[in-house]
Length: 467
Image (cartoon, rainbow, N blue to C red; front, side):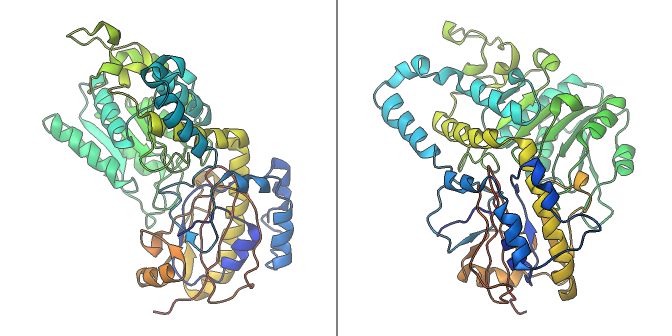
């Protein structure tokens, strides 16, 4: 099977006859800021013609970015890009070099001569630029869940007199499980409060969140962009709210890093984690990352004490002294093959820039939402994503009261692949190119959408699949 990594206005138009509940998760990509004038705006006449869509696509200055990714055909519509980003072509020679030359020829010497020892710090510094942090505040290591475990326990140790942890019902289940595991490990001395959504899992309002955060709260742990609806929190406002109550904040950036601009330093955020295999295009099992604000680093202790986190590892001391700074959050040897892939994926996104990525994301998502309103509303579907761009990540979702789970096998037979329910389709953009020769509004066509750059493939599908 093959995947298609582009999002285009033309393909949005073609997909607008979709009669199956859809969620598009991922990053829509890049147009120059000046090109935003082409996006339909409030009050403008909304042209649903193919010529209009193709006209927008022709203005795409980043169409050549499609060539950055491995695409072996266009038969399959890939709707799990938010679960596994596409393979950048530059990753393959990087991995080959690490295996054949650095490992195969230079062996252990590569720890020094090829910079293996500093890889976690170097890759972390590149990710820091994407999440609005200093280079000495982010390190690439372990998995997202392991990093959550480290930082939850580190944060709770900094607030020994407080017993509440706050998250929301929109958070990814793994985050909640890790919190529960930490509570159990600490003897069930802490309580977890799940803040509810009052608008059918679309958003969480600040008033409800504020009511949950009080002087017993040790930690607020939230996803900056939630996986269920694409709702995006105001990072600065939430951090200020928590700090006002004396609590610490831990952000999960798994659906934000590489998809939307993040400004950890501007928010005065305490902690953050994120993964490498979604929008950073780091490949299956890719190394994750964690962030700790500079002034908190030496106050914190990681619960996993390993050789790479030791202050003087080559002394081979029989007792542990944590390293200074972010190195204290390392444990075992870094996964160097995975880190090579993450670094290559991050470099692709850095070349485009998060502001440009966000500009294109908003342009395409506004276009898609207008199409959904016009074409899908009469079929019983509604937009299940925040309409305010300030509250929306790079997700666009439609929902239906009846649901369409039964459509999955049919979609797969037609060349569309998803591991989840159709109610929550995923998209992740990655390249560039726009246009397609599929017939306009063919009610049985499976349609592809293309986007551009970095992690931006949007998925899609159009066609009616009966009940």
